[in-house]
Image 1 (tube, helix red, strand yellow):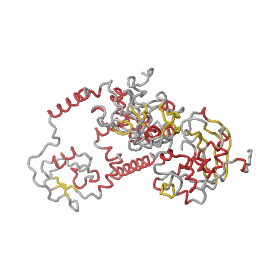
Image 2: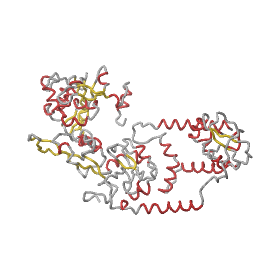
Image 3: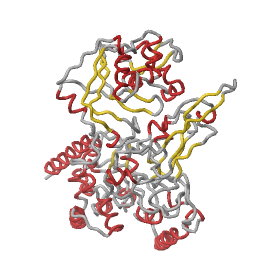
Length: 390
Length: 178
């Protein structure tokens, strides 16, 4: 039985490592198998999908089976299937911290009820030391104070360890009062946070550039569980966690920082991995038409305006079909009074999608002369610049 | 990979390498504008280098073909060279001597280049121009867009400094139909 468990652990660990290596980007836009398995079977995604979009994925039933097995047989998943458990099990063979049980042990078995690793600590020498997570629950609860952890060189189950610690503590130090207070705090916290003026729909934060495909902000905040998957998958690393940009509710939701990474024109990955649909899944053609903001030129910094020097790198990199940045040929004078014609960039507010590549590539590196703000984003009715778009 | 280049290289028995940021080394150029610039070391270590640009329209330089394609081996703050684009490209050609230049004019982009562009802006010419003189190749390439070599600043300056020939009448041009 012991060996069967180790075999199943080993198999799941190898499967996990294989899938892990397969997550290397192959350059294709659509996430294919086997990487999609992580998204199909991720319990967090399944639960959040259940709560947010009231849709039950078939893979959810697999999770329910695991839960039932755990309720009936204990920590089966941890010891038999979990790849992390397998990895920790391999390493804990060489652990320097070890657990020992003194002669005071009366084999009451209470340690087994609180063991978080399913390590059967009541079996003394036959316990599964590789599954020990060092949570110290057995040490806390033992009524005889027979359990101790220390840096012994060899594990001897009958070593007299453990100093008398005084009256035994209960395993969970959580009283009824604390539970009620926590629950009430959780329920009232969200409406209280939303009373902040930043949460009002009329106040638009220009720096809050949401990923393409995001829902309108109120719905977005209802669905975004701040899992961070979109930020992890963003191929330019442009999606970063928000902090206090619009009140407290946005903490750890994604926003685009073009200076760090622009939104790649031919990429739809963030919508593909969002588990709750806060970022809608878009086809490549749909995504190219979605606006997430509008580029703005600061004429005080822009080289052709402020320094009578040619540039228009922004126009060069603009990816839209008819470029959203065009230029005017204007006459400028340099310091010596010499007049010449130079191309000066202008932004076409109807075409600009706010991808931020212009900001990312602007040679004025410290504070780009062209930068994106959130106005004009397709998902918002109110945050619009032009007539006819709201 | 989305462009299909990776598969073609594999079929031809070649090796596809991606740009490694560590391979840029400061190289002396001593040109008009560029004195020194980080360039990709592989192009100097290779036995032969072949440039295969695609003929496209460009907002600043009018067209981007062979000479402009060498921007691809520039590291550092290469977005600054647009301030003196034509002179910088000529400076590059002082140290970068390609063995062969093959201008891909199978389909050319005539508007909204080099990166924007719609299928409507593409013209199918099914033409490939090859030569050892990149200035001449660019000069000839300009004619595909209805322009002259002298319309391109970098070609004009390179010709002036004797780095290549702009005048098409002085060239031996062979047209081969496949």
